[in-house]
Image 1 (cartoon, rainbow, N blue to C red):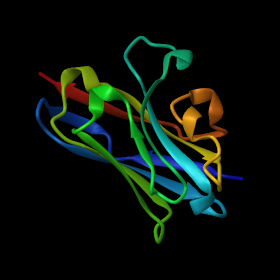
Image 2: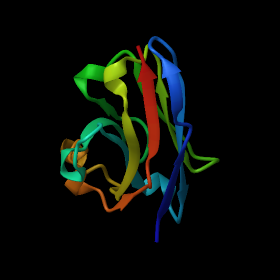
Image 3: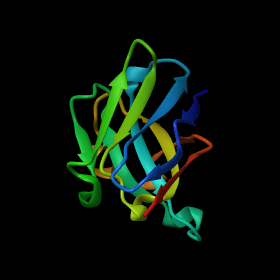
Image 4: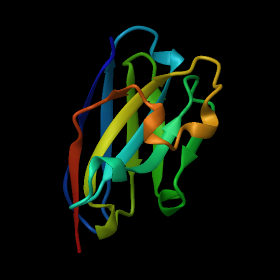
Length: 132
């Protein structure tokens, strides 16, 4: 059983930074690909937007075009934690951010890392609000 707990959200002005954390509880953290998704105001769960993902080894990372160059996903294997460093935040980044996990030790499903349906485990979400 895997449990994911996000933290680090908050209110920030446009141009500011936040770092989100997702603590992974369970076995074999390195066997799981980890993703970050966001659900904007008024959007439904099925409209969650892919933000970033990292393979189990951390050697492959993926980003939606709108955050490339601003956001960075990283993993700390000693702490079983995945991070999302968000810089140059914009009001359109306002959303509830969720981390998700899928077991993929051989990176066979990397072409699907942007699809929410691939993931088996989800955190409860953390709110990020960017004011203009």
